[in-house]
Image 1 (cartoon, rainbow, N blue to C red):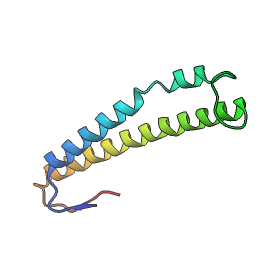
Image 2 (cartoon, rainbow, N blue to C red; image 1 turned 180 degrees about the vertical axis):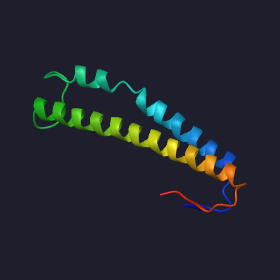
Image 3 (cartoon, rainbow, N blue to C red; image 1 turned 135 degrees about the horizontal axis):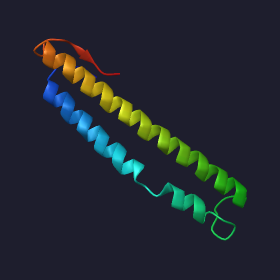
Length: 94
């Protein structure tokens, strides 16, 4: 996505939105799911496989939250650059 000219307030607003989403995902009770995944509450071929899949999904979710926080930081840094040069820089978000 390319924004030109770069609007620092638009970039900061996007960073805030990404942080809110990351916070919402990070507050999910994934630990509670793993704790409750025992032999009486499993889905799939075996209880162990269910547990392993839940652990993998929890790890993926945590990594995604971390990546979202990095995206927000990147947007904030780009906003700072855009604010310094009066919004004339071409900002590329990857």
